[in-house]
Figure (cartoon, rainbow, N blue to C red):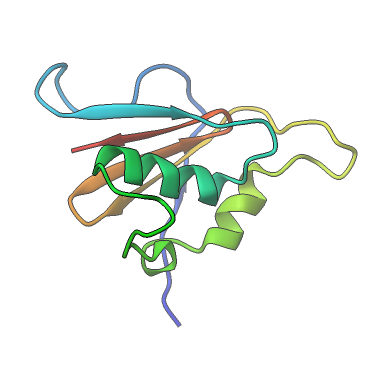
Length: 106
C-alpha cells in the first residue's frame, strides 16, 4: 500500500508555479462531467506533447485516481462542490487540480 499526502486548499487565482515567466505552465479546462483523473492525464499529455491514450504515465503511481475523482465529484443531490484544489507532483512537474481546471507547470 502506498500512502499519498494530499493537500486540499480552498483558493482561487493562478497556480503556485513560482515567479512569473520562470517556469513553463499550461492550464487544461475540464469538460462538464469529465472526471478529474481523466483531466489530469489529458493535461499532462498536453504539457509533454504526448498522446493521452498511448502515454506510459500511470497516474496511480502518483495519486489515487478514484480518490481524486471523488474529491471533485458532484454531491449526491447533483450540485457541484465549491472551490478547493489538490496539488501533487508527477516526476518533476507540479499538478494543481481544481473543480474546473488542471494546471501543470515545471
